[in-house]
Image (cartoon, rainbow over all chains, first blue to last red; front, side, top):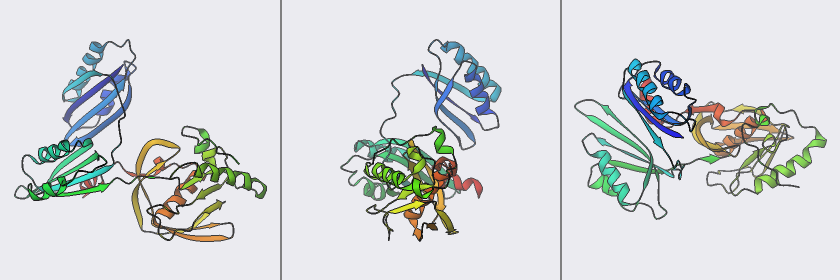
Length: 172
Length: 161
């Protein structure tokens, strides 16, 4: 059985140790995971395999207790099925510009309109309060016929800088 | 001649330091390396331990690769030695037949001088990267042993400055 475990809380040492310790009590094996600091908050996302006879409620309760100890704002545990590695990204799209509400949405709408699947997305707000800079890096699976004028629309209508680069992986 | 199976980690041979090849051992290994390399569409190099032979032999040929600039053609690296490497380096995403489905950012010198047999080659850019990747195999080093950054250098860098 596979579980998706997500949690977020103020960063401090010991969060990963605490969560994985709780999972290990149930024979949980961390498969794919991403954990990172977002604006001082430590965010974790894990896909975990547990034995099929594991008691989901007990796992949940144990993680909840660990989360409280670690000062996390709540741990979510959900059973997931149909895990599929999917298609890997072909390109990385970098978008940046003065910060405002709606940049991620603008980019996401354009990509969705072109049937582009996002495989990884990270954003960061930097700069000063007077001049905040927004940066967005998106890994995408580009369809064979490309995304047409999407990039020029981002720079034209939306006032953003957009650059698309092929993801180069050298298999040696 | 034969196309051999390419071993994947965690096969123990991939983490072993290979021994120098003796003259009589070379020919059949080189033949199999070339046959196996050429059986893949875009394979630019292969090292003997990848086909199960723990000897210091590798082949590299980046001819025709989009990143090939002044390539040296096919190089059969018998007991190769890196005699010089540039201080300047570059991070690039690498993958490897012995670690399917994985890629990582690896920092390598932009230029390297390699001695093998009676040849000495100064390789640049992608060709240097390939040679160093293959020679790493002869020392039991995989690209995962040389990861320079997780994914996005841009976002990471600001933590340090």
